[in-house]
Length: 240
Image (cartoon, rainbow, N blue to C red; front, side, top):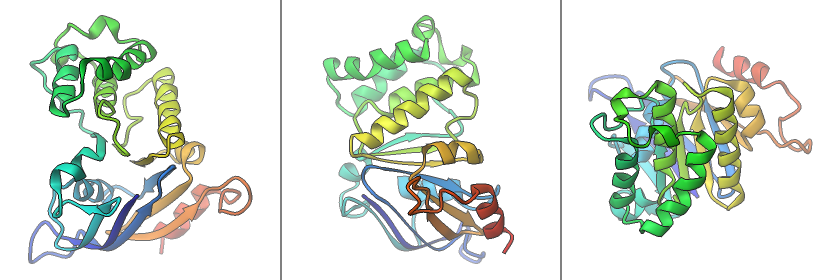
């Protein structure tokens, strides 16, 4: 599905690499969690995959398609939920959802099929015609999540997606992430919450000081590292 191979990136050409020969793969039909301390490079890695930052060295591809080869096809493969929730304050929620659907040329029927169940599950009917600038952090997050899936992306990327969500909304999101995986798509998300990763992930990648220090399967059949405490594994990796 997605391959990140030997990627190097630095914000300043004279500075130490922020991302230092990082490699990572996420298979179709799986959920991968990105773990790491603050400043480890998780969000930078996500921004490189999205094409928001330019790779200095290495290759990033989705289903064999790179950003350089075909930027439109590449970007249509991705649905993205930012950790900043910086969506258009001047629009209403409904206007924002329609704007995102229009951008991906999604028909009225298809967008309704995506949005209607979400609107009910997230209980945001009352907010649809209110300006986004009046929304709470959690409500912004819900609209960002809904909009990210309108074009049925094969790769769903979420940066700290549980932040600001209440327990009920978090449960809806986790169910949606599992459903995306079960459809044969891939999910890549960053998190500081190890328990969420243990619940959701097939694999985890621990990033520290710009490198992917460890990848592990969290299979519950005994074939992976699922029986080992993820907290113990994480601390062991980042302390070295």
